Length: 207
Image: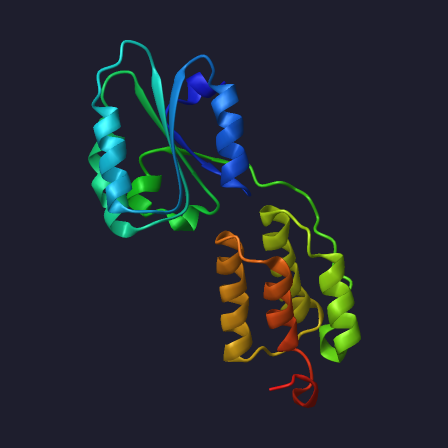
C-alpha cells in the first residue's frame, strides 16, 4: 500500500507514534527518519544530502515535524519535484496548514486523524477553588507527553467552548506556554498548577 503511494504527506495526531509505525510498515526497505519539533533549513540540507546518496533499491526519507519553517520548505521544493532515482519522501505533520501550498501541491495528502471523541475534563473552571485544583492536578500528574498535551487542549476547550469563559491575554499565553513546556519534558504537576491558578479568584491566588 505504501509503495503504491510513493512520496506523500501524512496528516496525523501523533507524529512520533506514526513515524515509528511507518518504520515497521516500510520494512524491509531502508528508512531514514528526520523527527523534529521544528524542521529548519539545516534539516532540509541534511535531507537533501541523504537523498543524493546513490541507492540501488528504494529508500524512504521520512520528514516528521510539528512545524516546518518557510525557508526549509522552499529549500525542499526542487527535491520534491524531481527526487533522485529510488528516493521516496514522506512528510508527517499534524496539520496541512503547517505546509506551504507549493509543498502540498507536489505530494498526495493522506489524513489519518483519529475519530476518538475526547472526554470532557472533570473540573469547573469558573468556580475553581484550591482544593479542587490540587485534587485535579494530583489525579493527572502521571500522564504521557501525548496525553498531557491532550489534557491541555481539553482544558482550553473546557474554558472557551464548554464554559464560554473569556480568557485574558495572560491566560492564553500560559496555555501556549504550557503546551511548549510539555514538549520540553517539563513537570506536568508544575505546569498544571501554574495554568489552573489563573482561574482562581484573585484573592485566592496568593499573588
